[in-house]
Structures are given as C-alpha cells and as structure tokens.
Length: 159
Image 1 (cartoon, rainbow, N blue to C red):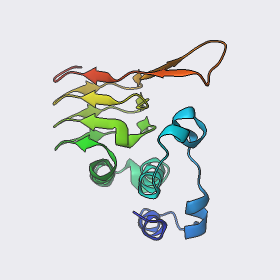
Image 2: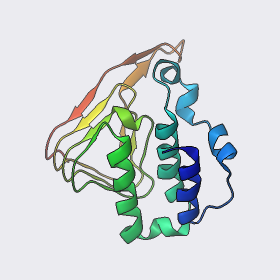
Image 3: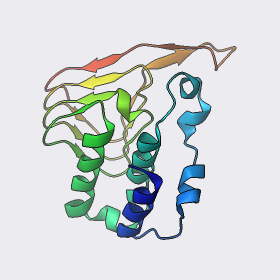
Image 4: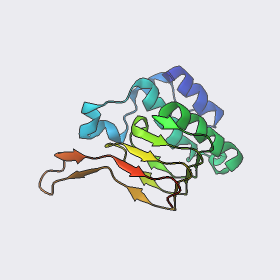
C-alpha cells in the first residue's frame, strides 16, 4: 500500500487531515529502535501499521462490525502469516507485523501488546486476554540499545 492509498483509506475511516507527504514523513516507534536499522519497515508495512493504529482513534473504530474485519484485512497483508477467523479487539498493538504469525481463529482481547522483534508465532485457537504483554527481546541494564532477540511460540489452544 503506497502513501496515496493510505491517505484514501484514512479518509474512509474519517481521518482526512493528512496528505501523501504527511504520511511519508510519519515515523513509528520501531524506526528508532535498533531493529529499525536491521529490518526497516517498507513503505507498505509502515502504511499498514499507520492504518492499524488509526482505526482505534476514530469513532468508527468502536463499531466491531467494521473494526474487526478492517483489522483482519490489515493483518492478512501485514503479518508474516494470518489464519482465518483472526479477531483483534481495540487497542491491540505490535511493532513489526511482518515478524508475526497467527494461526486460525486466534483472538486478542483489548489492550494487548506484542513485541515481535524476535518473531512471534501463535497456534490455532490461541487467545490473549486483556492487557497481556509479550516480549521477544531483552536488553542489558547498562545499555538498552544492546539487545538479544528470541522467538516466542504460543501453542494451539493456549489461553
């Protein structure tokens, strides 16, 4: 998804304040992390992240009949793998969608955060409850920029 189409999609959900140039200038938190140098976002990934974050900031985002399918569409394009029946409630965040794999019928409840820098896989029918936080990296106390990344795997049916 290029910036022109990102602007069009934002307008469809009620955000019409941004130009293509504005969207191109956006920098996400992940851009400033060490992983941002190792595996930077593509234009498409950045724009899909912007759309994911934006839907929770507009009135239409509280309408589950719109927001859940909207997030599913983004996930199918952004995640490394997204199975059928994926449901993400409002306020769910992640930093590198292209390092995230979710199986069929995976569900995320409100406010969860998934640090995907080291890669995260979720098996079929796995579920995250409200405000769960998952981290796939660690860092030393004396130097937060020195990091170690390890994948996280959440098995099928895990709750």
